[in-house]
Image 1 (cartoon, rainbow, N blue to C red):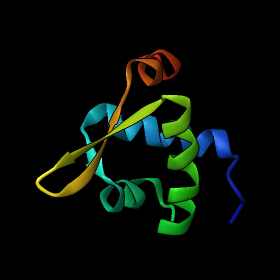
Image 2: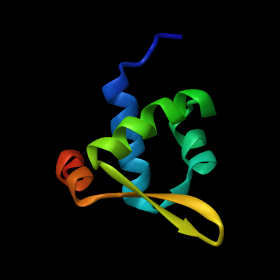
Image 3: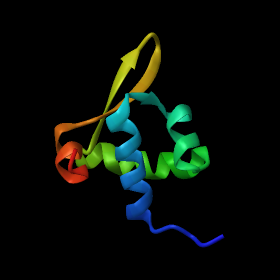
Image 4: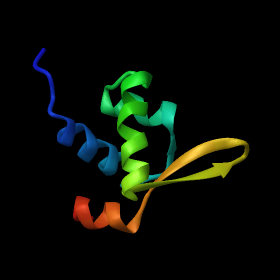
Length: 74
């Protein structure tokens, strides 16, 4: 299996979150990334303001931000 470029994984994350907000475990599955790697992508994306985090029913839910929509082109 060929290794994907990090930008492609980040775009998959944005695509998945543009469809609906997700907890990180539900986000990892459609992006085909394990949890450790997913956290290594979402942390910098949160810091850059591409995604945002909200506490919903005691769980951290990730949402695409307006900056993320601009980058994704949605």
